[in-house]
Amino acid sequence: MKRFHAAVRRKAPFFAPALLLAATLLLAACNAPQPGPDILAPTEEQTKLRSFQSRTLEVADRQVALRAVMAVLQDLGFIIERANEQLGLVTAARFAEPNFNDLVAVTVTVRAVDAGHMLVRANAVHNNRPVVDPETYQRFFAALERSLFLTKG
Amino acid sequence: MSPDSPRHRAAQTRYFETRDATELLSASAAVLQDLGFHVEESVHELGFLRAGKERSAREYGQEIGRVAVLILSLGKLIIPVDLHQKIAATLVARPTDTSGTRHEVRIMFYRVVWQGDGHRNDDYVPPGGQRMEMVRDPVVYEQFFAKLSKAVFLEAFTL
Image (cartoon, rainbow over all chains, first blue to last red; front, side, top):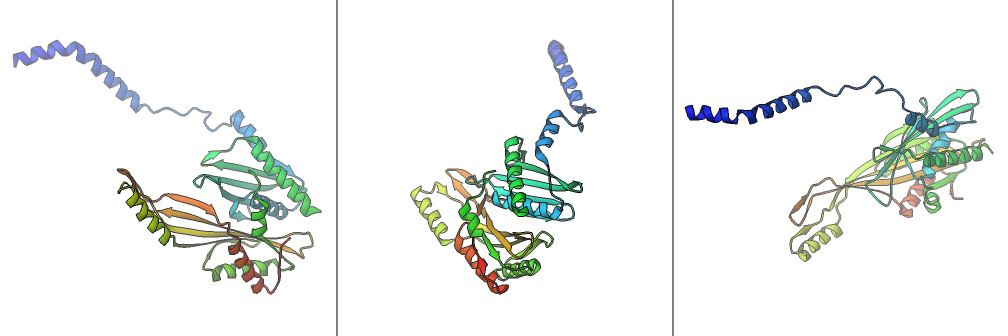
């Protein structure tokens, strides 16, 4: 017994800092990272993304705009999944061929801004990651404007 | 977002000389039902339909291939075979001009295939592998539109 105590005492200088370290780590783990007050505040990037995801078009009728959106999405090879006339909402998806496991999903909303204008907003997601390339959206809106122009004429 | 090929578009699209969009849509739903689909979503204001059916995806060819590979690889490789599939269709009917005398019907068929399990060397390949593809066979589309034009007593035009 005496020999055991002696051994502990001899090892104590090594034990103490290790114990202290472990305790600190454990306590630190309890303290979850607190979200800052700006967690839901818009960043500059989001504002930019939003600006090129939206476009105001010269259409008076929401149904006409929605039908044009659906036609353009189909032309781009998308499968329309859901459409809601009252809410002005269309969701569509597309297999990113030739890779059969990749999926591009897009949500488009159409809302009236004033009497003669509609605000169209598109969000595209590639495999659960938002598409942030402005060119993609520009191409979509260019096709949409062309389609609206054609149905008008 | 590249445009779909014009050839696919042509196969998927037909034009009907009619003013009655609702009739066109309900006839489309009826034809899809005849083909064994059940309608999952419909929005008549926008002329939109989505339908699907689930079927077995087992094929003799794949099973034979699986056995052949198993023998050739000396029992080291069991490739997964297709087990189950969901075939779905989305359809949009819309007027092509402002007066609404002509309607365009565009339908797209696609399928999702689920695979069974297999083996690669000593590694187990779990079941549930998924593959998605558009149905590109023009015959499928021709059959659908032939049935549809019979149902609405109208001829289907291509451009």
